[in-house]
Image 1 (cartoon, one colour):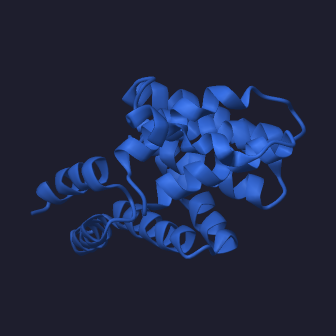
Image 2 (tube, one colour):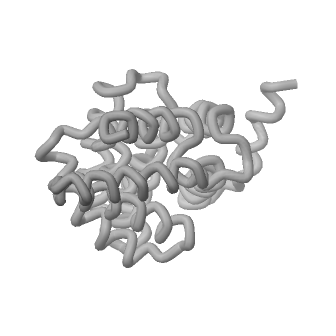
Length: 195
């Protein structure tokens, strides 16, 4: 079980995502197994990530930010395959909390990390691109919002509503459009494209 749990957690993350109950169970179990085997750093990483996910899902951005800030150095040190996701989540927290310049810097890193680890067309790369666009608009930089529609559709295809990622992707796209004085009605293009 010691070696199977990280593999199982990775599979669940890839198939169901971070906020699925089975993934949350696996992260908790992985942390517990690591702790009982004397690997306090791996236990801390799994449990910190678990707490951050739950706080983000509950809308507690400040506490999620603190937890993600603690998880980031560990992920950087180990070059963890979820480094880009942690960076993107923390960048989103920065931008929500009024620190868009830090968000732009970190979401740029997240996009590069996700593209390197998962490829350009993976939903994680599209997620990082949406967070980057949101942070750029929050910092006053104009961006091409139409190009983001594909990212929203890729994420919605992977994570159908209701899911944190699909809901937040639509929200981020809407916020970018609103900054440009436009409505978010273009978000329905995924539905129109599918018919």
